[in-house]
Image (tube, rainbow, N blue to C red; front, side):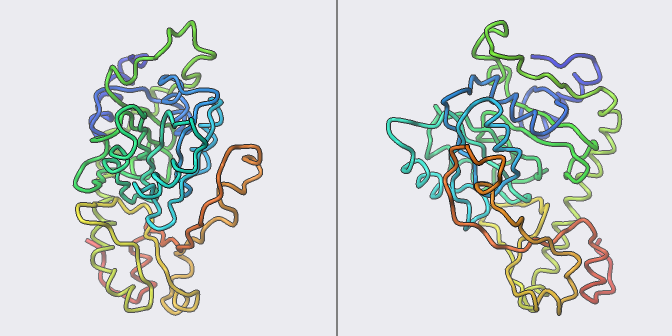
Length: 315
């Protein structure tokens, strides 16, 4: 499968390699990328797809868009789907049903243990790795793409690798081959490819993504002791994890956040969890325990230092 036009062809191959894959397709959005990944893998009506309880609502929407049934797995403790939460979700699935696929989301740029998920479901279940908030991330020492069949991502304005819009799905030529001839598919696999003009600034976007992630890693490493001294405990990676830190999850009282001067830099969780959203009222979602972390925005590191009363700049 090759995207149309030399600009997109070259950009697709280059981006695919960033995620440890060979080829792919650039789409108009991240949700379209997930939908394409499911359709091209033959996932459709009556198929179960495991989705973590902590992720963007568009992940669930993409599953429903292909007619599949989402199975929500509790990601409360780790904020990412874990082998333990996955096993519990599978136990709750009515027999003889088994999932056809699962979406492993590196939520907030935190490493999801994809290798551990693979050990639970085996080789027969399709693993789609969502790296929309992850760039240069490693989970248990493995780079993105090491243990998944497909990688999907978004290039939105707030994402680590930003083209101000669009998305992509990446894998091997075999993984991206449709299970049915295109004429036999219920609808075309991707109705909205990315416009070639979007990749004109790819070189600069890759440089900016590496610099952005490196600065956030340095900031978290240097400032975490101060945050904890102020009564704000932070999410900590497991051995071998290298987050890209789209957000830094914190636990602490509203008073501690106010006294630290961080009120304007902290993002609270959405009022409603995924399974209570009106758009999913008829979806087969299972209620789960909701994480209550506050999320420290890391898109203004100098502003954070000013709020914390620090004079030095982040290198």
